[in-house]
Image (cartoon, rainbow, N blue to C red; front, side, top):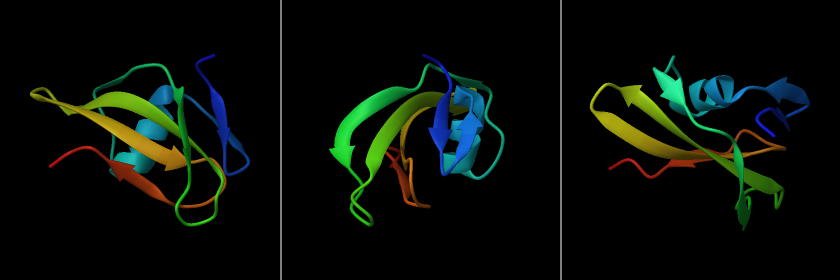
Length: 74
């Protein structure tokens, strides 16, 4: 399944990546379960791989219930 509910709204992989990154992205892969709990509220965390620029690939993590998000970017 590509679309998921995040904070009460259905989002596409691209929209999820934009929520995590804070700006538009070039491309995003399918949304997957991250098999971990949110450190802030204990909710389910999902992940999406995306390209914020032509030369970068990032995996972003977002809680489905609250504003918490992080990436593996350095």
